[in-house]
Amino acid sequence: MKFTKILVPIDGSKNSMKAVEYGIDIAQIYGCDLIVLHVLFSQSGFAFHTETVTGTITTSSLDDLNNEARQDAERLFDEVKKISERTKIKVITEVVVTVISVVEAILSYAEKEDIDLIVVGSKGRSGWKKLILGSIASGISTYAHCPVLIVK
Image (cartoon, rainbow, N blue to C red):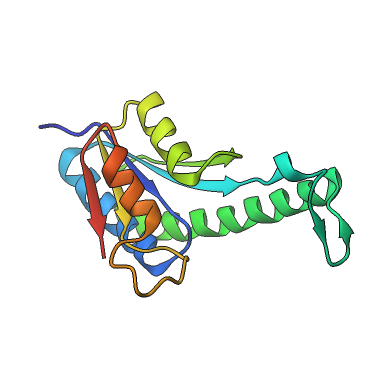
């Protein structure tokens, strides 16, 4: 099997950044592209139904939240670029905003982009220490159209 595109979804957790290192190493071996994806879950569908302590969520406050999340993603991508500097592989960074589940957004992206391998951290930021496998990693490994490498 030859890999041409490897996808690594990241959330900033330790395991997702380990997955980046594995993805980079595999991309070097196969001489393929590495796509690092950060999914922003947007609650804009609930903008007119949800209230916070400070009042109703407005379109502008959601825009502020999305902009802040994109800035966080850029910081993560800067880390990825530092890790990949030692290589000559092509690293593509993408941000996807979704109102559906994070798993579905990752899987849809992987299918649309003809990804050959998904490398994902075993647990993200969920904090559910009693789970052996994170819900995102579990969903990806269950429903992906391609092989999945889970890094712990």
